[in-house]
Length: 311
Ligand code: 3HC
Image 1 (cartoon, rainbow, N blue to C red):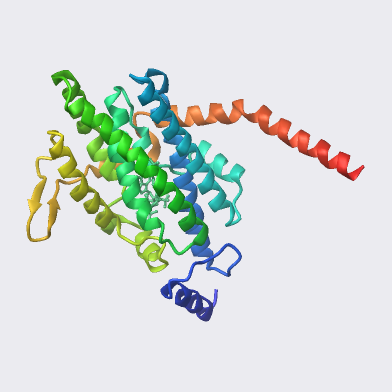
Image 2: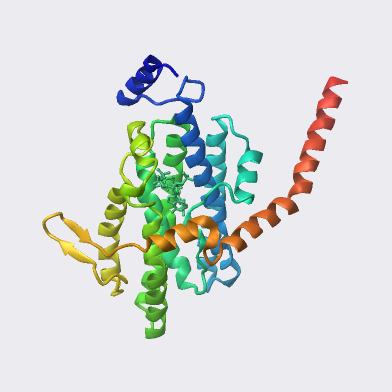
């Protein structure tokens, strides 16, 4: 691509114009969006699995109904995002193939097990809370279809976060055993939730270019800090202890200092060696294989209809 083409494109970005599917765009811009939107969509679909596990085990009908609605929402978020990625010329089949073959990533957070009901609350509170931090910024992404998908998704995420926090609040204000369930869950999900924001800025390979193209509006560490600053008071209100001995309020910066993240764990999980990576991909593969007959029947039906119309 010529220098003037890239300069003209950057001028549109700097003028806060939205880039639409049929606009001329640098190949790198298209590629990084296919990468990020595809992985975001995979995260939504895989994210249905840890929670789906508890739909039949929810403690009350009200909790079951809220969890059912949330898991269905996540499936819808996946569809919006796959559709946004398709506007960039990639097909659903290609993206699915990349997920099932392990080539495409999805958020590391979904590779952790959900052994207790408290985890369903903590996921809504922390995981959807972290997702909201990230997704509010993406509502202002320079790529039109992605930004517009985010606006709808963020409205539903707020419900996800509130229902999760209410579950944790109920446990934290319940019996000592219930409070212990909530604390144990926070202990297991706090650090993996911080890892959702990605590697530290110095190790982030895409941030600089993504920020120049206004795909990313805040750096990984900026969003992570915003999340910590908003979430620690919520834990304190519930009488729960954030499992970071180095967490300390820093008056000067008006935010919390926190302990070092275990980046070995982060990369191990990202590279497929977390507790649940194999189970998640196996579940997705089974769903894809079990659904083959539906796809074939729909294609056969469409073919017959086309033949009838042509006849
Ligand atoms: N899990 C898996 N991979 C991760 C990751 C994580 N938590 N964080 C970063 N990575 C990967 C990146 O994808 C990149 O690898 P790649 O080149 O193969 O794609 C590499 O680590 C380097 O990270 P960078 O910071 O350079 O990459 P990005 O600029 O893409 O930033 C990101 C990472 C902040 C996650 C960004 O991709 C993003 O904002 N994605 C959209 C939001 C998203 O995907 N959220 C996931 C959760 S969705 C969710 O929680 C649903 C809710 O309903 C619960």
